[in-house]
Length: 138
Image 1 (cartoon, rainbow, N blue to C red):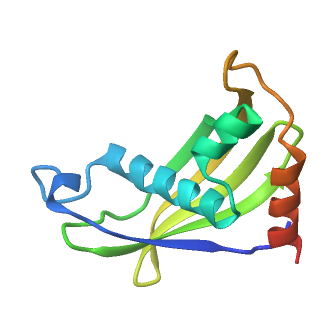
Image 2 (image 1 turned 180 degrees about the horizontal axis):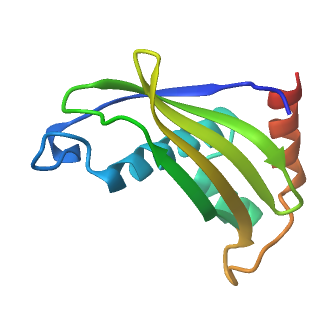
């Protein structure tokens, strides 16, 4: 898979930080989730449409995260998404959060496509696979 990157900027607000003035660890997961949502939107798919029209939702199956350096209040961050694998019913992605080119967070995400009603794994819809393939292999 190519190294096409999707970049999404985020500003750290006071509400994102803990008493020490650094981003509280769980808030990095929110930043990563928002970037994946924007990546999907950039591919042409709103999550509500994927659910309502394709009957599928995308859930995090697993993730590992490496906290390298803290982000602080008012930092301007860049969240990067790189698709690394497309499976039958899941995708894998590497995401980083950077400040001025310095990697603060590195995460490996596996997201599964599941039936919206039963939550059982289903094949990734062909239209989504095509969009991912067109973007990441071109």
